[in-house]
Image (cartoon, rainbow, N blue to C red; front, side, top):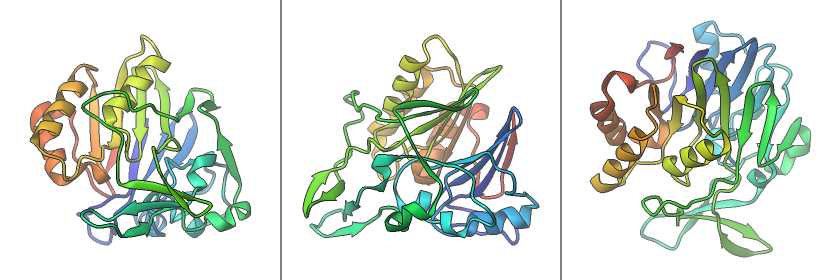
Length: 270
């Protein structure tokens, strides 16, 4: 498996761009999948600078319906392949600003034009290609990872809690085990992995690449997360995006060489 980070919150190579967002090119078993598109055309610009072609993709998987993972889709350079997204991703999504009653829209910027794009609405568990699965409607069941409280959807003028049931994981079966890709893990990375383990019983999680949504959480949450991650015996872990710098460094200290810190332009071969 080859992985290229096209959009990430940071970059440290000349000519590469960074933004608050995520876009990852995954190449495995003759398939080429783009996982998320960041919030703008940064992923396409970085692909060009890295000499990475986005022609001939087998598909684009959108992890969930937030702007920083979907906003770059209209800037795709060329003919779009099939786009795999939960139908719930197209709801009118808002976020309450911390410490206030003000809200801001954080949903898919092009959702009103969704019919202009080749969107395939995915189910709760779907094999989109042999050995490639998407898994959504992740239940928040662990007490150390309660459902997020800042996210809402607006339906018929009424604000309702958004439990992020549109968020989908991409699971790729490798010889070494499962590779798990998560955009933000809003329901908690341990809830995500518990769901993966229940859905693929007895299969080892070899690789975890994820935004873990740990930015701003205190030490107790970080300790609980590390303890939970350790139970899965994950061979390689790549914390990205909304994991946050402090949490990513903490995980690096806890897991050593099995935890890889990364930025836009970084490439991995497993």
